[in-house]
Image (cartoon, rainbow, N blue to C red; front, side, top):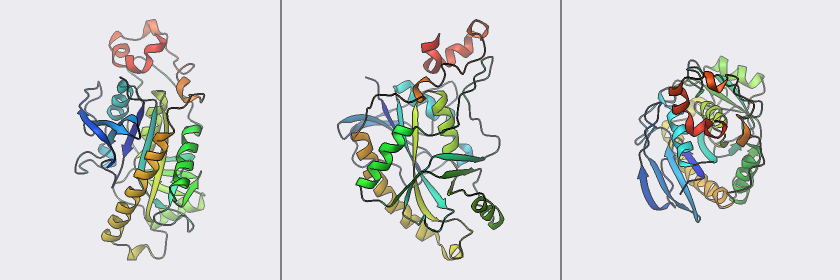
Length: 285
């Protein structure tokens, strides 16, 4: 049976406590190993696949993550929706620690990360003007509201390279540009999910203010970890509520992202490339 709902847990969210009937599944991909085995289980009556983004014990930096393997593995399981949880810093006074954000846009500050399944003889250009799935984001926002979270809808997530945090000059630059939150992981996931025709949204968990804030220097590791723990508990409630509303009819463009994106004639694509990407492009062959 295919697993139609995927959950990617970020910093602080390394497991879903309410997941029952668990089994672990290790998936080999043409792009290498995912961050960890996928935990398949039941959440609110739905079968889901959970992946700890940074691996067991938080072993992988944002730059080390094998984004292609992570998303490819979910695709081979049959996933059509990905709910991603991610710790972020706030670039706005009114986005406070412990708030949640369901962002609407990205700004890319990463360097050299592989963000596509394509190449090796097959060229595709998917639309990415609206990087998050609208209907799935609406479900996440409504679920957060019903869970009692202070949640903000829309805004821009700056995805930086890391693992170092911003300088004050960079942080003030992002604020002047009107950006809202900053993190290190979600952009590549969203791009690859779009190529794989999977609906994707982010539940961004604010742990602290970025370094522009005058109180930032008083932030301690202990404070951040405490906020991560509280955020993770809220995230599990929100994700469980969102999962309960899935599946839905996929009338969004996510499920048709490749329909007009592939430029190379398929008869000119190397057989090895076609075979590697069969889970993603199979319906167009």
